[in-house]
Length: 371
Ligand code: FAD
Ligand code: UDP
Image 1: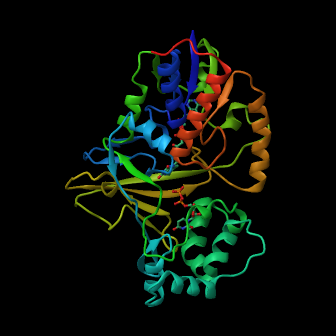
Image 2 (image 1 turned 180 degrees about the vertical axis):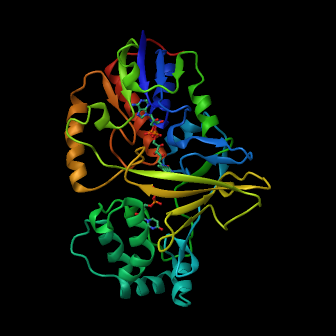
């Protein structure tokens, strides 16, 4: 009899497995339908020997010291500050939009935050109530920059116009008046030195943790004896889609290895105006690996397929609330992670959510004793 069956070996499932096994001495079985651990953060060396991310670029960044300290138990880190360029009007320009972006695009020589702020003020369109992903951008940088940098990219990525998406989506990307061209400004910005998969291996390496890969929950739910369940897959799937399907956005990844050391100047180049793909990632920028070849991933967005992104729209939030009510009513099941709580969470937020769930479990059930 397992104390816990954990469905999903991504951040949500693996953090909880580690906590339950090491802090409580609980016996845990982790299953995953895929043939590997680490969920969407899975990385591997490809046929050429280049370390790459199977499910697109994963860059770790957080402001949470607790999350950073926790993960530091399982990995050493490589400092990495992510930079992104967008191909706009035939030029490669910094994203988030910053002073350099505006100077290069318009042939200007703005030299202070105040000058950029004044320029943006001439562009910005007043919006009464900021509700949508269009409102956020148009109210800050105006329609022209919105069209060039956000509208096409967002339509490609989400299959709908930014005016139909919650403001939280494009609000992920700020606008800067400085020359700071980092994608993130978090306190902690690092990549796991030996990769994510190695970090997960260390997290799950415990006598009380068993792992079964290539195993879907539905295949084993009636055969495996367990006391309690942690589910990190799609919440609508768990309940047999009884209120209908929650929309998730999917992706197709095209991985390409080139017989030359470098392809592009930064880790990610976005294509808001041209191409069928949204962005191209070159992993060696992220990992620091030295290799005479280089591996890239082209990302194509899709409405069908493996669920990757919850789609933040008001009607989806309402549908999710129905599933959340069902989830809350389940006595011995915990729903954790991006798919199970239908939240557009980054890795650090999922780790934080899993650690908070562990604290709730601790409060609800006294431990047998740590190992
Ligand atoms: P997942 O990693 O999806 O793990 C869930 C696991 O459950 C999967 O392995 C799945 O196979 C398994 N599963 C589901 N259903 C079943 C079932 N029925 N039976 C058995 N197993 C099942 N975050 C960042 O912080 N930085 C980034 O740069 C970043 N880039 C991203 C890029 C892309 C393209 C995507 C899609 C996400 C990115 N993220 C990034 C977000 C990050 O991937 C997630 O926050 C994190 O992986 C979520 O972990 P999780 O455990 O909730 O889900
Ligand atoms: N976005 C955009 N143009 C860009 C970068 C981002 O329109 O050059 C929008 C797009 O809607 C995207 C969202 O901002 O989905 C969030 O971007 P982020 O880079 O955080 O997306 P993720 O890495 O999660 O796919």
